[in-house]
Length: 296
Image (cartoon, rainbow, N blue to C red; front, side):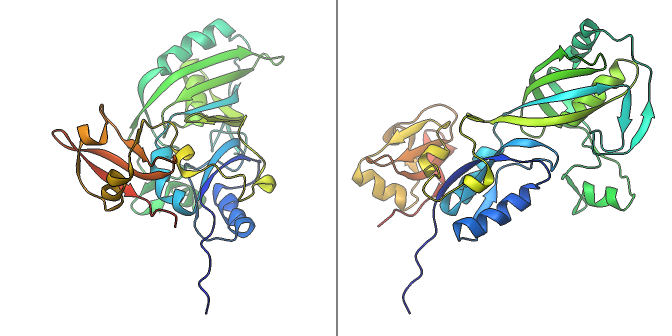
């Protein structure tokens, strides 16, 4: 029996539509691309739209370097209404008269949420506690204690809209930041409540909406190469002799590999193909965290 050819390898930058889960996108692309080796780098809520990075083939092994990358979002903070999901998809749990809140007051309150902060994960999040997703427990009407987690918010800008109770938000933040929590916490800081609506992720790492395509337009030919998928990592290009050692997963002197700093580093051959990702190991030495097989 002839050997089945390997499926495609690469990164898809998907502009996810509303009402699709991240898992739905992965399942659909498995059919479109004809391979089971598909995974995503960071869940995007069903109601949210925008950039979803999807790894295919060899790139599924690289997704952890993308999942931890910073992200950017746009959305709307609606003052005066709280919901049980902290966004527009949930049921209203409380209302507040916040008609007198000004843009200056909103911006002043937002400064408390910029920098290194701690957030309590929402019950509707995908965070696991005791082996179960929080949203699964929430569906059963169960609420559990959640420890606050450190995150970083580098930008939390707000602008007025035609509705005096709705403010357009732009957020740049670390991975793991809950934008719906930023909206709800802002409402509480202003003496009332709020929820989030119309969330759109505009960037993951350096991959923005300009590169994103609708799910139905993803093709194997349009995937970004593995080396491009990790374009934000510093690169080391090696000759053939060193490429053999890299392919065997050898621990190397950092000087021999030609790298410095904190890493990790992507290692490329002379053609620009990705051979491996290396990380610090011991004083002056580096080791591979991922080694990719070379194409024949």
